[in-house]
Length: 114
Length: 115
Image 1 (cartoon, chains in turn purple, orange):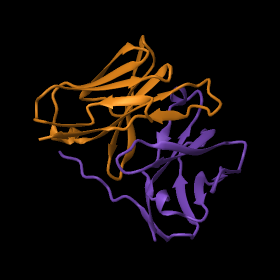
Image 2: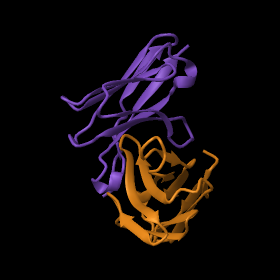
Image 3: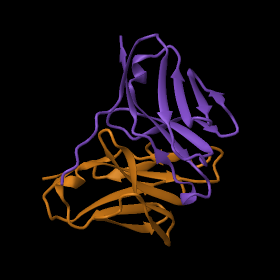
Image 4: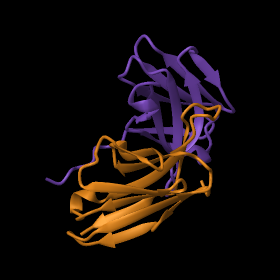
């Protein structure tokens, strides 16, 4: 039968506030993680990555936190701007499993109110 | 990413028609991928290819086929389109030799509607 899409998790924040987007992964053997940003009408674009030997990594206005114990990943965006409005995906991979292919989460839609 | 292009960008077709979506890249990457995106379901891998002679099924390959005509070209075919294949399709490339391990670079997408 015809598939029905699931409701996309949504986060709404005020411009200037900090945003936190969460992601859970299932493969305890995953050793590399990426956050992607997808703006309307475009393909996903790389934001930041982290390897399993780290628990925190910072970029420009973004920070990724990794908790391997509970298989949880988060993306923090500081001073959120209207241009940050997009769908955010986490992805994980394990080199040697499926030859390193990425497994994508279902995504979170971030809306920034001016 | 302008280095990965997809044609067409939009396509409306009818049930039972054969459709081909094309992907070209100028990044010189060996690895290419086709994904399908449905609302609330994220990106699901259809097929992937690690070089011209290599084709592998992904999570949801039924009803699809691919051809890797050259390092730079990877096409996706729907042999007999059905409404359930209405979705946004993305092509991606990667090079495991890059500093960012297995980062994938995405094209702009093809929106396919099957009536």
